[in-house]
Image 1 (cartoon, protein in one colour):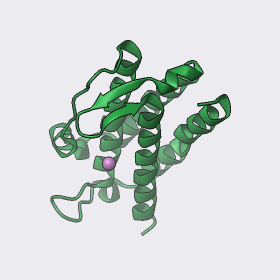
Image 2 (spheres, helix red, strand yellow; image 1 turned 60 degrees about the horizontal axis):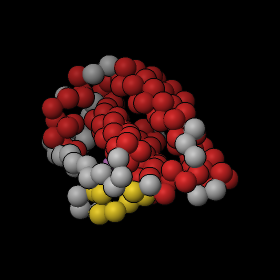
Image 3 (cartoon, helix red, strand yellow; image 1 turned 45 degrees about the vertical axis):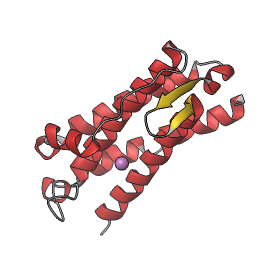
Image 4 (tube, protein in one colour; image 1 turned 180 degrees about the horizontal axis):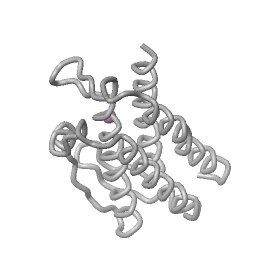
Length: 155
Ligand code: NI
């Protein structure tokens, strides 16, 4: 992966952070905690889920740098949302936590060498994946949920 592509990907990771903060600061708890059905996540729960995924993916990326072709565990995303009871959280704490983890990640990734992006980890169901593809799927996952959040707030 060349520097230009790396910079583009890091820029993608940095998108929407301020926007998310403003959005969660300004919306009422009534809107943020609303669940369309017991099984569907509220906006706060989606935000908590983004934090959970950030934590899990950051861990995987660190393992990929620490070891050669490490295997890492999966996690039950619904269970993680459930055990945290995110609807009871202060939304500013949640959004700030996500932003801190994301900025930490962007700064660290920005310091890696080009060849590091080809390092490999073993996902239990997907199999071999490069550091680059882990970061790309983190980015796509994040963009998907940001889009979902924006659509719901604007309804
Ligand atoms: Ni998700």
